[in-house]
Length: 345
Image 1 (cartoon, rainbow, N blue to C red):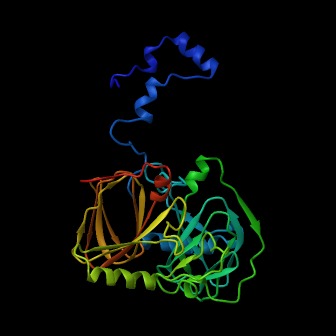
Image 2 (tube, helix red, strand yellow; image 1 turned 180 degrees about the vertical axis):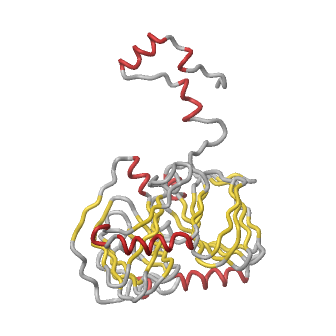
Image 3 (spheres, rainbow, N blue to C red; image 1 turned 90 degrees about the horizontal axis):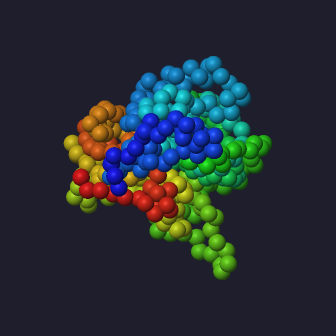
């Protein structure tokens, strides 16, 4: 394929006018923009959000805007490549930091995009998904899959803050994004499935013939168990890095159709250079301190901070102390589209 493609300006003005009138345009002047050579040329730029800077803004939002007027009191984490106000943290991932104050409820709704919450701060908050009450403790991953009713409540005495991750950009692009509202849900009088049916890894409820599990059988992944598993895995690893994917306990598939979540532990002093991946990604720091260099740009991160990287980014993590992070990525979407790729560095 020629690298010296013609430009629009090469064409006579009358021809350009006739094409515009006919509602068509020539492909060749735009070819390299939509099909660059070798790898994509992303709009997304590395992003970094310091929780110490976000927390006062969230608390001020709580003073300025009652939850009844906000429905969801959220500060959007906008991709620097797209500018402030962009409803994207990467090409396919939306991130927002949400606040719920003691005694507040966020009304029930459901929407076509899928969402997950990583709990950042506070106790006493909960999410109800299709009637199942899910406690929200630091580091927990809580799912609200697309189409499932969910609402939030707060029975504690201090602010609760969590990070929202949604595949919203995909649904906006497909013009399929919408929501419905409903009254608060009746709650089942029992603990959530992570504390009953799926309390132990490798075990799932025995079922009679013809009875199948729910599509999303477990909606809450407690951080305490995740951290314990990472620490145990690290004892017997040899790379100074441990990673565990969050999976559906019945099928082993990723927990959501288009977004994946991977818990990660880095030993103090460990330098980790992952392969170049076709996925965009965000990292939320549950515990620890370190720095990450993304395409030559270095961010120094601490507990509760969040940062992002575009596709095929050159990434180096370096932990200053034992650190735990959760990586949010779009590998499930890319796998379904049959183009997920990793390249050696």
